[in-house]
Image (tube, rainbow over all chains, first blue to last red; front, side, top):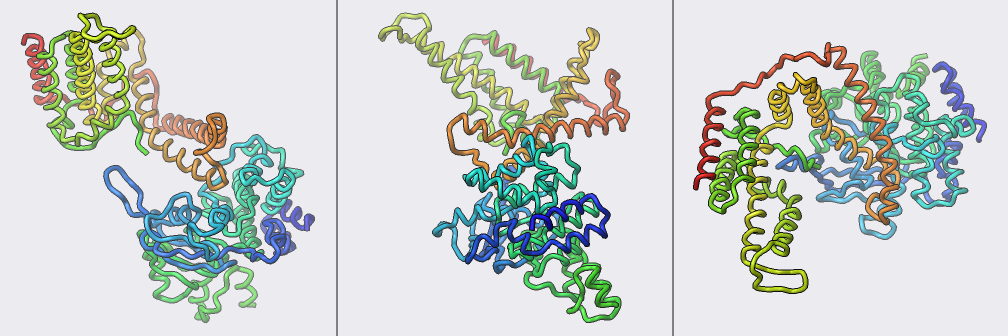
Length: 317
Length: 260
């Protein structure tokens, strides 16, 4: 298991194609072990989520600016949701409300079927991981290991458990501890910093992972590595919400979608393709995924649209 | 989050439109007069003038209150110290406390003077954008260039600092949220723990600020900024009739306060 993880780690320095091959050897089980899902036993790996009428506004000078209004949706344990919408649509606000960094003015966020104030809710909240936009800005510790250990230590885990979680998280993001553990976070490359910041959240073993524009300003290789990491987490059963403008990666990774428009849900549910869906995406300053466009131009059944180039190649061969 | 300093209330009143230099000179002159004149009548004249200026500015009164609140303890302390220690014929004595009517009078006068001073000052800061104020001060400080005081550079530094306060506050908020999402707790624990809890916030904030400063310096150089030469302005300061009128009225008010 460890060997497989290290392989993926080394792939970071290699060209994209071999990175692909290396990543393919990492099984979902390895990722599951890294995020602690397998060890959780009878508890399902992912956390289910339900938002009811969530409303929140920011105070800006003299007036309150509504950020999200009456947002309701459900996401089953292990589900993956692409949170789409133009800039300022309320995506980041919604993620922070789900994590509990702000309290909604109205409505509620249920975690694993538990309402706020219900038994065990604070503990459930701690199992929600939130990766901020440009998360490498939060790095502060003198070594990669220490930075990743920050979150687990706040959870008051034993040092032994912290060390284990740190090691597994570093392995999962392809920064094996023996090589990167002692490195100074600011001495890492941009892509490595982004993955280190992700490890800092993954070390807390989130069962619901919220990501706010994780692909922004990354080079193609790092984007791909990150997408692979997220794919592994998804396969391991972690519930994922991915807020992004990148419809191609969203389509590749997520089974469901939710479009926010000016803080209101414009569409939610399984991805649908067709004139109406495309029109909705364009109105929200997005577009249909390229592989869906390819399928449309080829006159193929959009219900069978591929999610990755590999899937497309297979279908076309 | 709103910075306590440099509060500016955007608006389009007469007070807002006046030239920052004229406003600064008028308020400074009034402040000097306030400290020269020591009678309640004179104080009343200046208070009325400051209140009128505030009314013209159209800024809600609670904005003055917000600026004044942090200074409340200073006013209170001044009052108490004067009441307790001022000389006079005491009507009540206990240990080191000697209350006299003249002491109370003096305490009231000094406290009110502070209130009027803050009122006049807040008309200036509430109706003048910080950048306009710095520009005005840089202009007023020009003669100092003769003795090699880099006034324009100092003004630019202040302008940049003011410009980045809101940006830094937003970044501070984001970093604090990010660390809270990782389990950081800034609200509980003793002083020591709270200070320690700030380390994961301050380090990224410093790193970010230095990076930003670097970028800004590069961008300024790329746009041909050179220190030590007089820059032309996109919006040159223009004093008009209203500004002259302000100075005349202020002079009249000051004279009236001194003479009554």
